[in-house]
Length: 378
Image 1 (cartoon, rainbow, N blue to C red):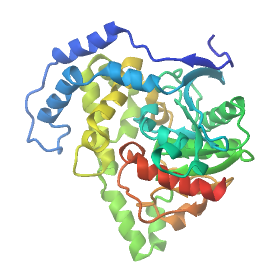
Image 2 (image 1 turned 90 degrees about the vertical axis):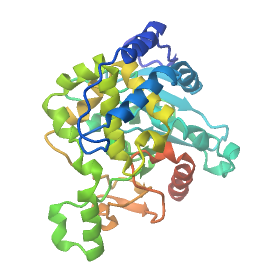
Image 3 (image 1 turned 60 degrees about the horizontal axis):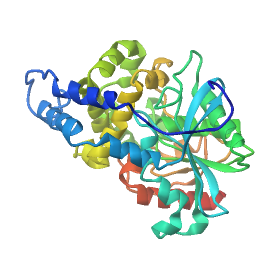
Image 4 (image 1 turned 45 degrees about the horizontal axis):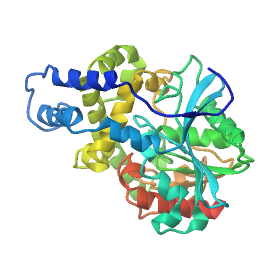
């Protein structure tokens, strides 16, 4: 059935031997000698990592997570020679707007586990049923249960795939959301299918200033630029450079050692959470481990790195002018700069911001703002 354009139901069913193997590897972990203090200055603190590993081994229930995720209707279909996994939740509201949710890195479709119900059935969550969505969450090639990437895959190619998926599902008009990696993919969907896409909603990342923009900045804009330059997620482990240089080298370790994988994910989630609390507290410890476990069981630490190892450097998402754009949180982006490449119709100033995981950590406010944007363009 590889490459078949038929839409086939899919359920997650990780073999018990794989679950047992994970616990066994965690139980036999070799822990490094203490290096420095217990802060994050030299990387993930050992005491913190040991506690997190113990919970992954003895407290985290993969089968409960698997059952919850299987409560979301999942499917497979062939797109451009790839086997694409996706979630498709139809709203009970007949006039719902179809919506593609484009996940980020190092995320997966788990990023939207607590958001789906709020979007598909707002009536059940005390919100306006007229703002409902039919929700489609595809897994990017190389992530989760989708096929690994082939040479030549681009983000524009992924955008075309998601546009083709929405046509295959019979949707004539739809919206697109994206954050982190999704902030690059979502605009590509609009470029590929401008006559069908109602609007693009980005979690954040548009209008990020560069050195070339500094001479024309106001004092307020210069302050935003300095905040961007000093952020942990800008100055932490340069995953772009690391994964461009030797993705296979590191993937060997992440796939063989759950502690190595846990440390890597904890490092990146800590940097991306942009706050004083550890990221597993920001998004919830079991949600963090659910995402990590999906990477572990599907062997996708390396294959999900392709957006880094197929590039020559870091570039901020630019967006597109084919359809209207809304942004959940602008800072540290600057609206004036974002409007060079986007027709921005929604740029609220007061939303909770500060990290990559707001759709996971604050699904209620995030859903409310997403609905506010699509009221303007649907």
